[in-house]
Image 1 (spheres, rainbow, N blue to C red):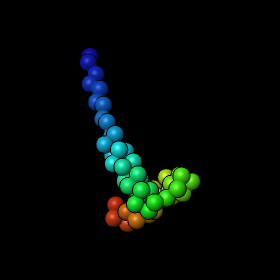
Image 2 (cartoon, helix red, strand yellow):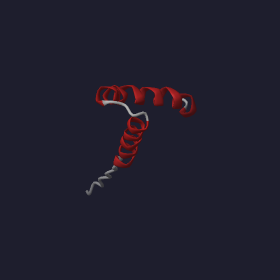
Image 3 (tube, rainbow, N blue to C red):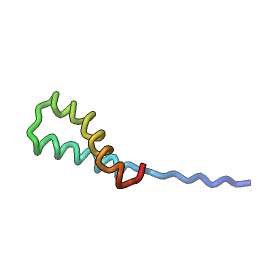
Image 4 (spheres, rainbow, N blue to C red):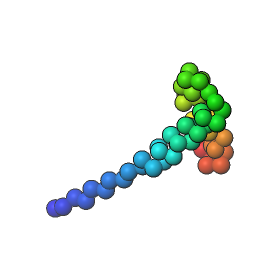
Length: 56
């Protein structure tokens, strides 16, 4: 009996998120520590913004 293995790669989404984060840090001219804080805070604000649209 053969089992089929399906491998899905989602690196495109992560790369898009990283590019967006770098753009935000550069556009706002943030320093290192502000950019590092933005790495943590930015996904929270994106999630809270898009949560009503997604329906979760």
